[in-house]
Image (cartoon, rainbow, N blue to C red):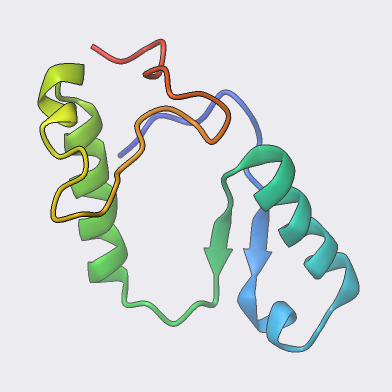
Length: 94
């Protein structure tokens, strides 16, 4: 469905997190602080919902920067486009 990212995404097993598995906790921390992305498994969210969330996200980022900025601060909640480290739009955005 979607194109593979240009880097490896950490795979986090939430069952291991619940059981306080130290290597999994360390990987989870690294994923959140160094990479900013991760993949969760054994989270309990139905596949139909995760498929829908992926489709909505993919469709959103296929729009132009101007279209995406129309949802900026929608209902008082800021939606960041870019990364945590810059407010510049993604370089590969249309």
